[in-house]
Structure formats: C-alpha cells, structure tokens
Image (cartoon, rainbow, N blue to C red):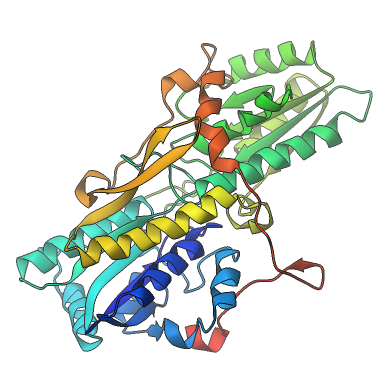
Length: 405
C-alpha cells in the first residue's frame, strides 16, 4: 500500500478542480492506493508538509460533482520557482522528507508551463538519488500555450466566456446612433489563443469582433488607427479584441515581474482607448476582462470540464503503469466529429516552452482571425454544465479557511 499526492499551481481556471476530481476518483479505484493527499498552495505545501487527506474533505459523490463546477484551485496555488537541484539541494531534501513521511508513491502536479518545469526537475532529482516516486504533470492554463498537447484544460471554458462576453458587449454597443469603439483587453502574454477564440462569433453570423490583435502579429499604432477608421466607415459600433501582451511603447505596462520573470501585463486597452479618443474623437471605452476570464464557471464548457477530469484520471493510470517525468496531453483525432485521445510526453519537452497561435490562423492584414481557426476552436466551447444553484447563484465547494492556514 502507498499514498499519492496532488497539488495545483499557477493561475486558477474553471477546470483545474475537475482535474483534481479526476485524480481523486481514479485513485479510489486502485486497491494499492491508501490515501490521496492534497498539498496546500501547490509545491509550497509539500515543502512545508502542509497536506490534507482528501478523503476527509471530499465525502460524497455530490461533493465531487460540486467540486467540478467550482472555479479556481480549491487547495490553493503558488508561483514557486524550484531551483536547479545541483545549485540548491536543500529544498529537494525537504520535499523528499515530506513525501517519505507520507508514504507517497506518486506526485501529480496540475499546472502550466512553469509547473511542468517542476515536474521535470523533481523527476530528474528522484532518478539521481534512486528514489522510486513517480512524478506526473497534468496540464492546465487558459492561455493554451503548452507545447505538444492539442489544447489545455481550462482554455475551452475561458474561450466560451470571452466569446459570450464579446457577444453581449456587441448587443450593448449597437443601441445608440452615434459611432463608438469598444476595446476589449484579453489575457495572453505571448500567445494569442484566447483573444483569437473570440472570433468564433463569426461562425454565428456576427461581424464582431471587427478587429483582433494578437502578439503573434506585428502591431503598429498607425495601422491600428487606420483599421479602426476603416471599420467605423462600415459599422456604427466597432468591437476590438486585443491581447494584453501585444507589443506597445515602453511605459504602457508596469514592467513588474513574478518569480519566473514573467511581466504582469495590464493597460493596453486603456492606452488604445485614450489613443482613439485623441486621434479619432468618437465615443470609446475599454474593458479589461481580467480574472473573470478564468473564474467564470457559470459559462464553463462541458467539453472542457469533462476532458479535464479525464486527463487527471489518466495521470494516475500513467503513474501506476510506471511512468515518471511525463505530462499528460491531448491528441486531436478529428474536428468533425470532434475526437481526442490522451497520451503523454516528456516534461522536458514542455517545460519552459510556449506554443504560439499558427500564422495560418491570422489573416493577411494581421488584424483579425482566419476562418480556418474556427474548426479548431468551436469543439472546445461546446456543452453546458448542469449547475447546482443556491439562493439564485451557483453553489461552490470550499474548504474552511482554517484548514488552509
């Protein structure tokens, strides 16, 4: 008999708890697994030996279903950068001490690019000291920028929210007779997948978003103003979708970085709003979707949530089959009918890498999304959750705050 540990890391999503449920449910099926420990605040919980036996937290099938519809990381998250063990082995010794004390035979880490770096480093260290603890990565990120996997858990729900919100903004914007421009700032540091997904509205007969700007296409302020003027000549209300990470003049964004050296991005929408107001003079507003993109589970994609649970379960099976240093990935078999399989890839080939929006998905002018992208995006946003409601709002699963301290 042995135990397994699971942790959640990085930015929250609508689907990361569904992957946790997948890990937990699959572990319950295996007679050789005694307990499933959840690490509080990602890797930090293992370093500090702050872990919860999930059997004391998730008591019923109803709890599991409620957890699947709950956004964010129920165990808490972190942005902890694990050093190279050759340079600083002390933290690795703390991790090993906790895992041995808890009789952990496998550790599953649910996270994005940087979390997969942790998976790679831990698996390599365990090999170097001949420690038989399997380490498996379960992907998640609304940015959809992990290599090798067709898409990432969390992206489909975020894309569904973005598209729905832009559709509602469109309805709101067209009611007045005066010309207007609405600029919607969408998450995406280097990769424009989420911003590009707003173009699924074109498949529904919408002309909005009329302009889409992603980091993969060269951006110029002069070109932007020309594009806006051109669209205003055709449409009363122009809707612009813009990635937070498009290239802009120095000083527009804060320049502050996190533990991994990633910039905290915000401000491009407001900057473009002021530019349009000064240069064109029409009614203009900017809207920053901010964290709502990743926590709006009331617009979750059923496809996303179901797949997220499945890939969590697949991670447990991979560990039981002897895999380590692997990340579970989706392989798309077909668009119509939409079919995917789950496989694994070396964490070393995913960690610290980024998958960018293909050039073929961007129109020749660099200011919108080609219709060829819609076949990729559309299946990922399909299906609605049968939400449990309480007092008129979605009910969420939560751990008492005292347990997480």
